[in-house]
Length: 400
Ligand SMILES: Cc1ncc(COP(=O)(O)O)c(C=O)c1O
Image (cartoon, rainbow, N blue to C red; front, side, top):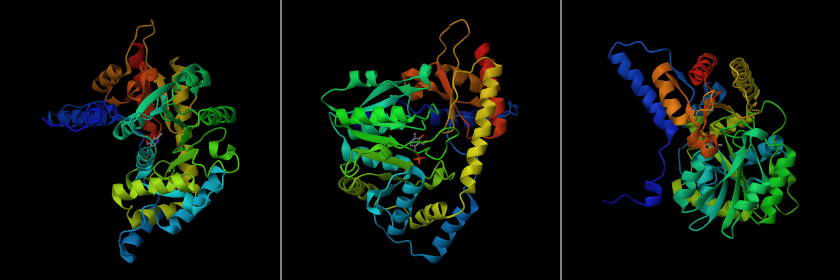
């Protein structure tokens, strides 16, 4: 029997999509049998409840009608790279040229191309625990080893540099950070960012900063480590920034994100992008351009809706005595679902039982890393109503 590369074949199942499929199956089965389930609440995935704004959709339609859909440059059309360089300066506060930017198939595609371009067999990459589950999957496809470093729930899910120091070996090549963070919603303050950059410098590591939620921030500011670089350091490729249109503009299905780094490294990444899929469709790039040049009120409106849902979730958690921290960005909250009498209740079993009994789908914490095992993650990008019902069900079920 041929199964392909063992490391990839043996990757753990993605609980989030499995649960989503399972929830849909339960609903379908119930309908066939004429059984009425409680109303569903789908809180397991980070999918905005909003439609992509109309001016963005129209730009794609216009492109389909007016432009030739030819092959294009792997890093993206020059007009889009120019706009992306301007966005980095306007929103992220550091200066880059268009040749420092390459677009990828979502933040996911930008990350995969970056990992392929930088790390391989025998290399170790420090990733947060808990983290977005694709990091370890993508690293496995490159042959590199993911080394999780804990984020501390007792200190707002920030990392501890002393812990990071203990995990460094001669094979460590990269430090991955993610702020605002998935699944925690933590936003690292300047002091933490500065310490992480100093750590990367000390061990001569790439600092990959996943800033996919850079514009989904409720309090404080999102600080990119790129703003703290010394002259010439950006060009060296020390810093790699990952961004996406998916979250800011409710464009998850369009599949466009981008990576920003020094000239030589972006060339290597672009070579990977070219080998992987030649280029992204021009109409998608036109939609992205319209997102950047069009009215930005939609970004604020969506963010305010997420904030409202965040606040409502916090209120509910306080009401049920399950509040532990406030997510300041991204659109997720981790909820500790351990029993009151200290009984260990694993997030995965909890999520399955919750789905069966309440028709509420949440992401088990274990899918994000061992530290989040006693937690479930809910997405604040779901509708107000789903969040209200879902959060109540979680608390009631956890108390039983
Ligand atoms: C932390 C993080 N990075 C990257 C991505 C990938 O974004 P995209 O949907 O644009 O591929 C996600 C998506 O959920 C994410 O949460």
